[in-house]
Image (cartoon, rainbow, N blue to C red; front, side, top):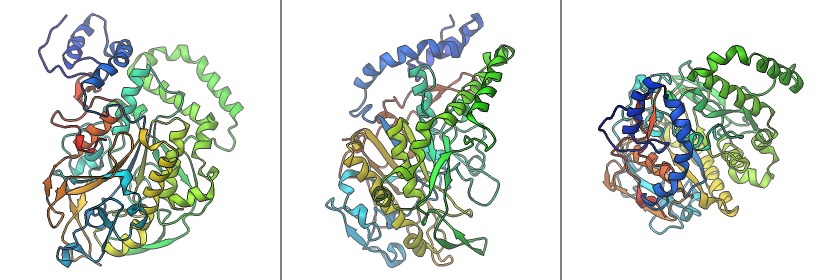
Length: 504
């Protein structure tokens, strides 16, 4: 066998990087990477307890995970890192109110959250070098990002989305697909409801292949409130379900609902026809692309017929009191549906507060900052986030469910002179919220200067956050994943660390 000297870091299956490279050489003698990965899956599962003993505390504390991604990025100074002593051009017009955690003030427009912050930990010291809408940088292991990559999901430089990587590792341990979708994203395919034809990067499986992409839902409902939004100097009235939606709103799996003329009997006959063609497709199915297609078809067929999936997505089955606790908004009902999907068997759900109607929307408050925060953003977030955490806690599910509320960056300390006043992109200091699944309760980690512009204590980056999330879900953040050619790629950069200050 070809012997190589290299790093001893491990792959997700328990293999070291050195062993993987050696197998690349042995492939000439008939042993392929996919065969090795499949054969080694059992060893990976058996190695987990030993791995856990070498990890910081909390390894594998979370059985499930909900990611709340606030696209566009909220201001740290109008949420959980307020600076009331700063000049007015920095502190703005909103006032802090005390929370139940001594010394932790929150914005006056987050009154519900102020009463439940003892169930969360606030991280105030995130920073990085890319003040652009880098969802891919925030949620994948890719070490660098640029605008071209961010506007091109298919750019070969991308790394797998967090949920995709988790599902990949889980599948290797299981030895195949689960019976229920394990990596689900709400409320609709990312960046699909804004103007323009360019989709933004981030929630995709990259080199792992499309079968590891999140399974997206589609929102089925109508907004009951409108708002004036502006793009390029042109204002439009848009009915926005993130502000409010009608009570009959619900969700379904994207592209898996049956056409009216296609009954389940006809679907099964079509499947039988496909099965009759299996012999003719054997050569294709032996290839990695064929295996991906076959897996995707199996998943799509099972989702179409799954009454469990349909029921879990039908948020209308919840008591109206519970729905109203989350808020009758698209984000609130998405958070509730995320909890329902976890109850049904999903491992990880991502909920995106995405642009709606126009680009430059959601939390991207370059203009009219304070009215948008008051009318469109903070009250709706206040209900959804507090509702989710309190609901999980009262159901006894918070301790083993990791909840992470994050964005791609923060906002400038100094207000701009844009139309109505605004805060622009700022990545040198911003905040995130964590709860459950091995996270400490009632803690504040890190600090910024008097203007919330620079980190002065416990600086961390997005890759450290990802490393911590992997750790809590029982995945060694320093394993390697094989790319399309079998080359080992680090799950997160080697310099990334588990943020032990967040852990219980």
